[in-house]
Length: 182
Image (cartoon, rainbow, N blue to C red; front, side, top):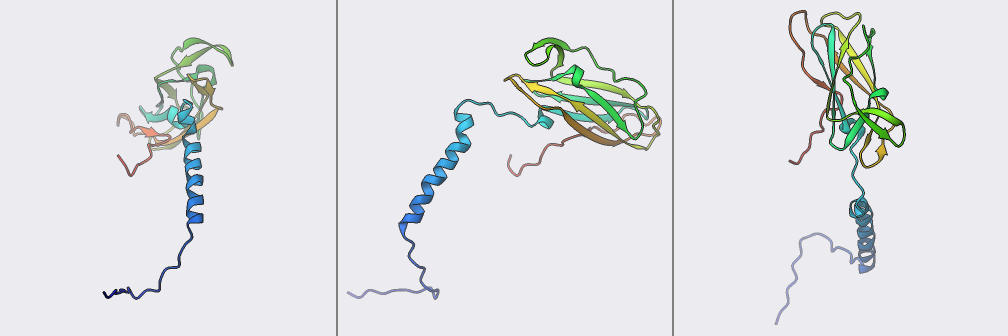
């Protein structure tokens, strides 16, 4: 019986000993186990601060801006850690903060906190229709699981609407990232 060998025209591939392949598999499995360890141990996956305390801003008119925090479920912001400024210029009055909920905090004692949506009206000092302004919001908050974030600063630049034009569009400080997968 005849045995035929066919060739693709390419040189033959060298034989790779099984040793290196076998050594890679345990290392890969160990890396995957380490990556999944926090989930397996029941440790929570915390949101990035700009997702836990998402800021958006909208010009209500040429002299008033509404800053709005969308505070994720399981997170809260400290009322006394909120600061707002506007660049260029200044605020015409202190921000109008709604009352918060009283909480005894292990880090800061008795404090007021916010959960859920938090709208804050800002009266602009010297502002002109069509002017671009940047709202700077400083905040600090925590997750209910006992993790507190360091103070953070978020900036949003928007253009003030013309007199009588009505509210401008909502501008997010950290727009949602586009995903290739749904």
